[in-house]
Length: 235
Image (tube, helix red, strand yellow):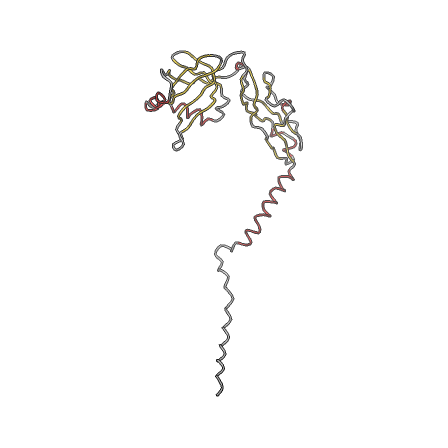
């Protein structure tokens, strides 16, 4: 069962730029709920609620129930417009959800049993290729997260879409291959990367004078040769 977060809003009577500016002057963020073959609903929200959800992260995939005057509408946040200078929210768009109609959503991948993975115990490096996976789901069956189990993974092993747990009610956007979610890389690759970085930094360090060292003295200039006297004219 999907988890929905309730967010309070109030109805707006008018649409248009002028009405939106008036809503902002009242200290609210104008917004709209659209989709599911229904007329758009104009709403206004407390900017503190909008910022709270944005700062939590993952807001593009979080499921909401927008409460307006006792009526709750299930929706996803699809877009938030911000002021270019102050970063204050200027407008927010919700997509209305309808049971039975699939919706595109990004589901987070949670890693478990990394502490007992044979590959990681041997010094392998966990390389997460996809922190979220874009899938199509029924709004009532969107999972909170997918699970990647590392308990049996050794160095050079990987987790693919087919290995994830919790995907039964979803279909991925990528359908032409069993794509990789994460891998356990050999420790030598990490060491080689560090050695290359150290090697690149060494010439720069050698070229720079040591801290507190006196600057190198220039070689003394050679004295100029005395000018030869001009030859006098004869007779």
